[in-house]
Length: 196
Image (tube, rainbow, N blue to C red; front, side, top):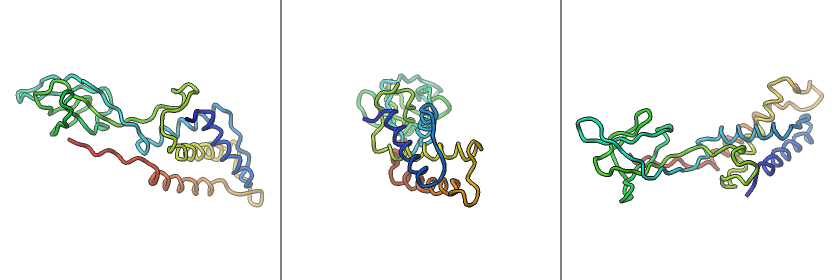
């Protein structure tokens, strides 16, 4: 499995290719590349995501219709399945409110809640192997590359060369951004169907 150093090298390799093509000088510190990579992982949600399960979540009764609810401490819009914790059968007819899932039947008293979450940043892995599938590497590297190029182009640190001095990085960024959108469509995960 790849780690942060491997991903930094992948971005550096792409930047070296751009430099050799005459687009300018794009050298970054490790900390800068790590920031771009963390931004890429966060920016690619929900195109790439992980599925998370909360097991045995207690429900409480509310109202006069004998429905139950479950409190959640995350964005309830990410929930795609709730099931009986004992029988493992899907529960239908539920809906969400801020911080809770409502409309659960009186039985069961505990449920399993399934949701999607963004992948943790590179920093959370502490230099070790990252937890996401390696198939996402091209998406993450492409997104980080665009962020790195944009940081130099937009900040004025190294402005685009004048006419006759080299190629325009702005058009290169536009081309790479279009390529990223194609990659997101082709390599991104399908969102799970909501069973409500």
